[in-house]
Amino acid sequence: MQIQVNTDNFIHGDERVIEIAEAAVQTDLGHLADRLTRVEVHLKDQNADKHGPDHIRCTVEARPRGLDPMAASHDAADIPAALKGAAKKLRGRLTSEFQKLDPHR
Image: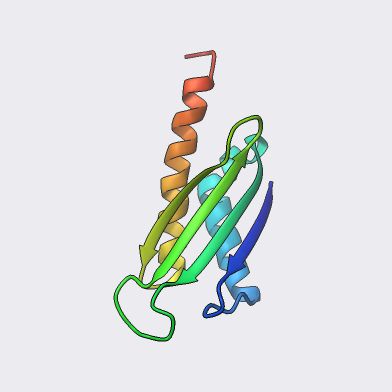
């Protein structure tokens, strides 16, 4: 499973942000790694240089083998919380979809 991290002009995509993103993806989606080809993480500061609650938006998009891409977003006050929320939502969607396709149900 390849993990790609994208940021906007207001979030610096340095090594630390990439480490946090990869850790969040591995924690919540790692058990599905054999069924995913790529996971893309998109981080955006919705308020740019202004301050406000829940201004970081994280969208995590997964590319399951043989299926259409699936995505989930989450808004939070900081990057780790936004990552965790989006990854958790996507884990639920992917798990549900894979359970529907599992012939052993």
